[in-house]
Amino acid sequence: MTALTIRRVQSKSKQLVRKGIRGTAPARATLGSGLRRTPLPPAVRVALSKVLLRRPWSLTVPVDRLLLGAQNARDFTAGDFAGATGNLMWPSTPVADGPHVALLRLAASRDLSDAEILESPYGEMALACIRFQGGYFGAADEAGVVEVARGFIAGGTSGSGAAGHSRAGDPILVAPIKGSNHYQVLDGHHRIARAIVRGERTVRVTAKWLPITTPLQDLLIKMSWLDGDRQLYQPLPGPELRDSWPTVRRCTDRLDKMTAFIEAHELDASSYLDVASCYGWFVAEFGRRGFVANGMERDPLAVPLGRAAYGLDEGAIQIGDCVELLRTAGRTWDVVSCFSLLHHFALGRGSVNEVELIKLLDGVTGTVLFFDTGQDHEEWFHESLRGWDTARVASFLREHTTFDEIIDLGPDADAVPPHQRNYGRHLFACVRTGAS
Ligand SMILES: C[S@@+](CC[C@H](N)C(=O)[O-])C[C@H]1O[C@@H](n2cnc3c(N)ncnc32)[C@H](O)[C@@H]1O
Image 1 (cartoon, protein in one colour):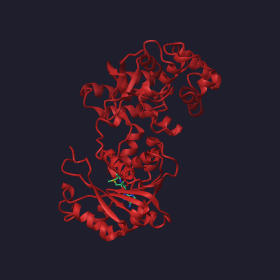
Image 2: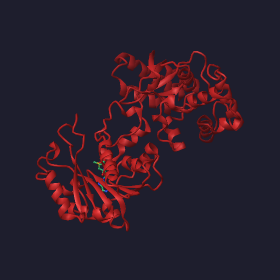
Image 3: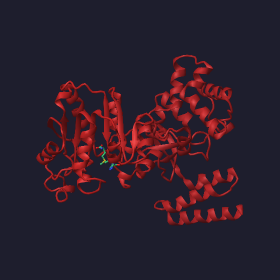
Image 4: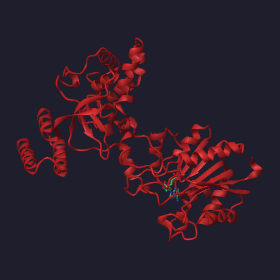
């Protein structure tokens, strides 16, 4: 069985060479997954993987393009590690900001106690590996972790080949991250960390052929609102998103207008609700400014994303159709925002019409509602939203809500390539003057 599989793998390899390595990604993908599934002795698997799955030349890569990967176990991926530790952002974190570099920097400042090592991000990572993978470079308990860490601080560990450490001459191994010029580190975190602390800006690496995706990318692709498109509605950390995931709403312009308005009008406001909160960026920003901040969002994936990306608290985002959630809220928030949602209701895509929705938003607003919607100057909506210009949005708000003042705070700054013929939606502040 094993010999037969090896023959199959060898024959695939010959096919690859015949077709030329470039342009054969699907064949290499089949080969890669075949290799992983096949019960081969580890030495044979590694040898085949080296020949077939790695580029035969090395690359010089800036250290800031290297992101954290799996730790210490070849069959445990970075995604597995992120899932087991609940840290979705692990594979989206530069090695320079990771636990290996942090430990070396900490140790350079003073002698560390065992407790300090165990409580450091490096100690936590190593203990997590022991919990989920059964060991960390030969360590099976706290004492072992301290020993590995002290060896690393002293300049040892890699090169010995012992207990999962790379052997002398082993390359730093990385995998390209899809749609990005970043790489995930598969082997060599300790060596890269040392190079970074020495002040080196690049390292030589060997790259695999097949691009991988990060859990953050996977989650974003699955989010219902994106429909498989690679674009972001709100700013997200994650260096691997920078190259091919444009942020179509900059958001900071609307945030600045809201916070300036609250300040200028000296509104006494401490609670905030964002309806259709998407990833939760506005919720996080109001939270940072001292508000008790909540969101309502239909897509359940917004919860793990908001927790990982912005550190949102459990329960900060309520999941469901905002119509039901607003109807049953039974309370008000001082500040409410609702962006880019109402036109979907005006177009018949909501469970109620646009008038019902604005009345529900009015009903949960204590002091001020910040609001924008799609308008007919946008290429997307010339026909479907005909008549919904800025004046009509203002009169719609005056007619169907109980606010004392409707103030136009001007257009957003999102009408720029690739969406220069869209956006430019006006932000309105709908205020209860008696409440300030
Ligand atoms: C175009 S995005 C706008 C996101 C955000 N409000 C902003 O401007 O940055 C629309 C968002 O509304 C959410 N959404 C759509 N219909 C909804 C509903 N009935 N209840 C709650 N959320 C809804 C979508 O899942 C998506 O996150």
